[in-house]
Amino acid sequence: MFELCGTELASRLLLGTARYPSPSVLAEAVRRSGTGIVTVSLRRETAGGRAGGAFFELIRDLGVRILPNTAGCHSVSEAVLTARMARDLFRTDWIKLELIGHHDTLQPDVFQLVEAARILADDGFEVFPYTTDDLVVGERLLYAGCRVLMPWCAPIGSAMGPQNLSPLRAMRAAFPEIPMIIDAGIGRPSHAATVMELGYDAVLLNTAVASAGDPAGMAEAFAGAIDAGRKAWLAGPLEPRDMAVPSTPVIGKGVFA
Ligand SMILES: CC(=O)[C@@H](O)[C@H](O)COP(=O)(O)O
Image (cartoon, rainbow, N blue to C red):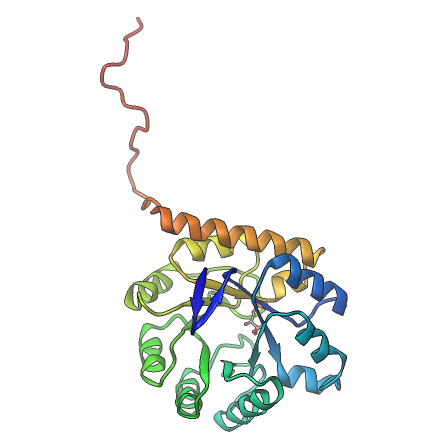
């Protein structure tokens, strides 16, 4: 089991609910992923005119915990307002805080992110901040009251997978007691396994499953990869070396002319 902010979870996969070809495919993907948490964008769904309707009912019926997000917010005031609306609608203090700073890369605006995180944490929210792989920003978010960190590994929806492992390793090492979830940019199950092998606690992803040829099949593949990566981390993976090391001992070996 995995404990996240007081909640026991059987799965280390958090799944987004956008971009699925149909509600039934989404429901099947959630089921086969084994996830205990789905993210929901309040703004995206209300913009589509489905607020309070079938979509939210479907999400509630999935029987998993909802992590609303502030996707599409570009300012502190917008993000704080969206988080408060989500709290009322979904009756949860959990909020995935997304504050976008750049149109092309959807890179978080880390300055506004820290400010909004402080306001929301003071207001009783459990803030899950979508951030960069910057150690100092991570530290500021913890000072602001966050109890979990969610660094990206590549831009949202890019499917590029981990672009730079060094800062991700440094962040993991700097905050050994903090639950850390890789959020965004994962494209394949092997990417998820790679970050889990670094010791990350969980992975949040959306596009790679929702846009796959068979979303439910891909959700299951991700679940297996995340599980494998976690087991590998616990088993103590070898560090790569520059030189060859014979895996078969040669001492005492017979000599054949
Ligand atoms: C669903 C959600 O919260 C996304 O904003 C998240 O960041 C996932 O990113 P990918 O779509 O790249 O997996």
